[in-house]
Image (cartoon, rainbow, N blue to C red; front, top):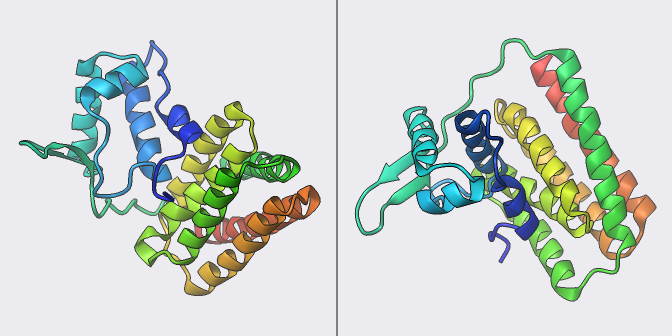
Length: 238
């Protein structure tokens, strides 16, 4: 259950692209899907026909986008009965960025604070259905039990699950786009074991506050959590 893509997250990453830059936007949307872990390494993307319908582009555009990402090592195309397009496992390691614009970094992190703190507050203020409560807790447990190789993907899906249970569908697309930018930077430096332990404890406080219906506590917990990752990002990228 916890590995199934979230409904609103799927809608966000598989929505139609702009007409003027169909190829570039299709490539960007596929990369976003990979960076967010909506399709895990080793798993298959929807068929070319499905993607063409979802993105509202031609199959030729989808095919060309897939070819570009296959050439750069992000996707693997397989023929035959069990063929299709699969996310590479392992994914290529992004190069460490030589020059991250400080204003761009602060813009992305500032937007993240607004989106995720607001989502946590909104989620805690709602009366969640039992299935939503169970799924959110299961996603927290999945992150806690995750292997190092799968940690960031499951961590991302937990954060997007919080945005989804906030009950504001348009917020999910913003959260997905923002998190993809954050992951682009996070993926350039290694996981730190003590940081994982600290993050898991913070995740528990965030999810517990949401499920207890405590908006102030949920917002405070997620802001504290994000402050830690922001410090790492500035430290590694500055």
